Length: 542
Image (cartoon, rainbow, N blue to C red; front, side):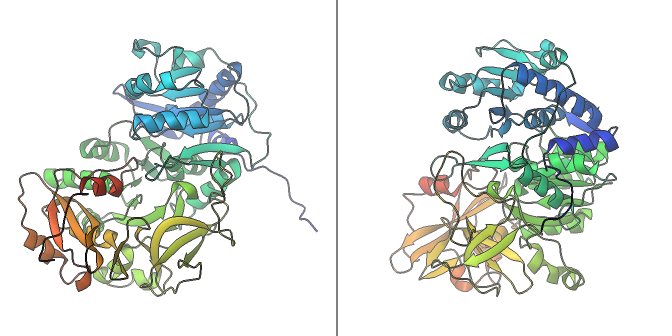
């Protein structure tokens, strides 16, 4: 027997319809690439997205065709999302932080027909597009007055495209499992892989993000999504914001500490989300200039593990609650969230830190498991490492244009992360499977060492990799980038770790680096770092 409820397809055009109907005057504020702060509303975004849909249809874009965006967080970028998705085409977000060769490979693999881009990225496209035969036209998210001379053929400005179209366009009317968005992994091993979201998965992810146990967005909130729209759907904020009637503040191309602080204070931001490196830059700017927040209450930190020093600093120096989270492109991306239950939140702050530095528990809609190399369950004792596995309606079941299975016999996706889960249900990433250090048959968490090491006042960035050892197979080496003007004293950095990690986890050496490479998503690029350190040998004393 089936229920007697309406068949109401979960398609994302309904999200911006809802925002127009019930929160139409709510602002979306953008620091434009051209410079000025630009203000619009959800009603205006809805109307302009409809115009864009008609332009796409006039160009022959059909349901299932891929239309790319290469752009910063902005209201214009949001309009392209809804305009593309509303007619059943696939919005393919391109990551400009990838190498040009990878970017060209992705465009060709996706067979993108149109690219919407910001002025910033025209030089990049000039180099890439001659090798991308499927791209028929490029639209720059600006007006005719700012459109530069380039070598790119079929170049148009966005405002002229919209001006020539009607705002009357039918959206939706297709199955909720229709492809909606395409986002490629960063390709740290082999070619990038395409994760193809459906309307249904994005809609369910939006419901998840709106709950109090995740972001808890409301019309009274003001959200600054620093996490880019080209990285895992800006963690769903470009959907959850309109769905909740929340004012959005888009940072555009400027994500330095001074620019972010100006937007936070000027627009009354109450909540923001970004990777740790962004918050470290803002934190340093505020400390250097003796600044305080007047409205910011909460920040969501994900993308990579957040150092304890940053969590403490935001709470103790600025009164801002830090919520730790984990996810990935394949999980849309919310996977776990670190909200503290009352029995932990009631503990003294120092005792809470054990859980605040973990990535949290899965929300409803994500099932999580730890398994060993044989595929057997691993104890949730907070100590036993296992491969982190996930499944659910917002988790990828396969990759675009690939027939290879990515699920195990129980339908779980192997994230490639090594983790623990404690008796309270809090998950903690200890390493990527390819980065874990295996010493004497035991595993050492490079991430845990890094998070403590970066808390030293002289350290700007820290990374830990394994170096070959004749007896123990591998031993950890701490690589640090010092703050300007500081000099290396190996002993003080080892002393900073001593007593905070197991003795046998202690690095066998400390190496200073002028630079620690970051990947396309802001994480430390261990693959490149190991390549740079391939000729390194441990000291004889080790």
